[in-house]
Length: 457
Image (cartoon, rainbow, N blue to C red):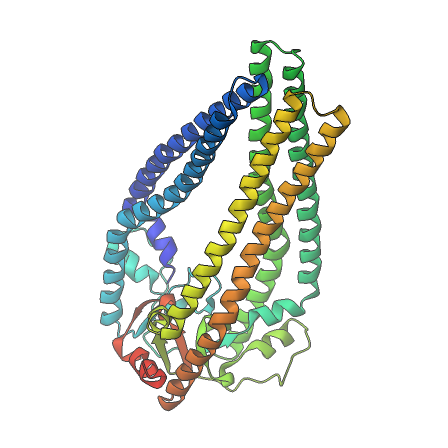
């Protein structure tokens, strides 16, 4: 059943969403006020430095205060995310528990051992409507019944498909990815140009102020214009993400629909009622693989024999998160990852602070008339380059952490998967699912303790 659709249609969910939105507005308003105060303090400080009305010691103290103020804003943004997550859990947890309990009741009445959540992205690729429990649960809850298919109380035949392999073989996917990459580069260049123009605008206004060409009122007008351009850049970045996402959907959704239709056709011919994405399976018997039949349906060259030897599958479940949490190797890996992350963050923070100091030093030299117009442009270009280097460092940092995570956790995952496979074969199971994609599963399906014993934990 589609758990997401069910929750979205509950009146209690709409009330919770409205409360969460109001709470978010309060938090965001506070953050915006902090940003305005920082900008005002920074502008006042820069003006004092340029006018020469601040001693070097006071200048250093004020600079440290501004850095702390800026860090407070960053910390608060993280706090907003955590606060919203906690509030969402506080509001939705009672609703989710209520529905999950009701699903469990209906499943027990119908003799169902496991209920799969089709709203989990890329998990259930095909499901026969005769096995959809959503209308039963909706009726029990007094919600509108969107479809009233008769529920069939028989054993379900299952199979799986490696959709990533299928998509990789489709020429249309490569063409779509090339178009998306070209669009992303085009938008990124435009965004970079807007940022560079804004930086030049700040420098031009600063030079006019130093030459006494702007009255206080004109300075405020120019500051407002620059602030508006900053907002435009922020909006452009949001629009860019939406534009890329919309283009992705426009290009790839027809391809996904084509693949899903092929999967459905093959499943019906093979008398299979549920088809899963291979990536959600912790263990699977290759006899249940429909991938080659689907590729043949799409007129693609298959990687093996175009046959299907499956049928009714006995399956089990494992809470992989709990299994990982109990592995001593995982705790050691997480400690190493945390140490690496702190080290890289400290280095990044050092680069940012050095850039801020150098930017301030350039401002001071401009104020003292020590830089010619050409030297000012060269200094601005150098600072822009450093800013780009910091952005690249941040990207590299994310990749470095991801690579290290894979290096440390992949051997542990392989060890766990091997143990799960051994248990599945001993128990004559053809599939083992992560418990997270099931809304309800019978305790008899759970092989967690057997897997732990296999791993010696």
